[in-house]
Length: 335
Image 1 (tube, helix red, strand yellow):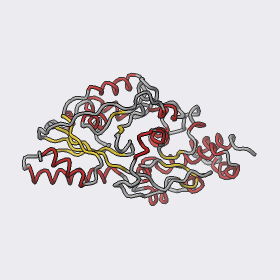
Image 2 (cartoon, helix red, strand yellow; image 1 turned 90 degrees about the vertical axis):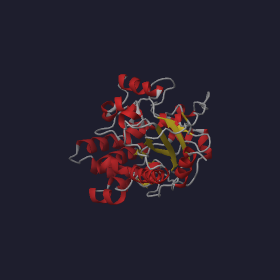
Image 3 (tube, one colour; image 1 turned 135 degrees about the vertical axis):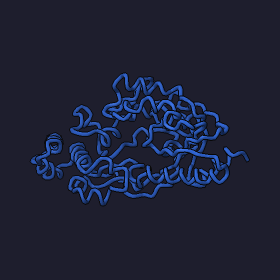
């Protein structure tokens, strides 16, 4: 067995459902990022613009890189709750924070590699680094970048997170797999805000996942009615994808939250309570204020009159974002 095959097998022992090796070279599709930035479709994701040049070639981030090990870690599904008055949480956000967990697994793989090749060195990445992970994942044969802009595996779908190692060793690369979306448009049609448009750059400023997690300040009024009950992320384009019918129900990340929580609880969560309940999950990125804002919006979209007293109270809040959102939601509820 070659060192490359041994390395991928070791990654699987660390929980990777997918593992492949890509060359440490610029990705041709990186021009899509330039198009997105040029069209100003990156919303307030300023880090994309700041790191755009580095992202296009992994060697600008890790100059010694000669190959890239890319892994996909399935995160499965949690306890779903879609009933009236529940705030919906994306599958990955209901698990333990993946940044630390997956980077730790990749560093364990690197430590093993050094026992087989003492000259080996590398650098781990898990979402927060300026690496175009999906493009390197596609180059490593994990899957293809679908119309929903996610990496899709024919074997396990798209409910997985990407992590990997930029390595100073010249390892044999895997072959990319062909794109298999074909004429299917289910993910495009499932997106209520039309963030996905086949053939055009991804419109981050319309994406419900972006709006609920990354967007600060008041939510755009034109998108509010279509955001439904989502309070942290969105899975609609993945739920529509036929390849996810084979997605694993269990993943490597520990479940930390149900996928639905009562909106009253979310709106009432103070800073200390937020840190206690969400501090070790991806939901922590929202901050308590962001989660409250999203819960207040979801109350308006619910159409449930029982939320009127809650929204009336929040309508008097000194925070202008929360009070304005509450009054907007209040106007949508029947008396």
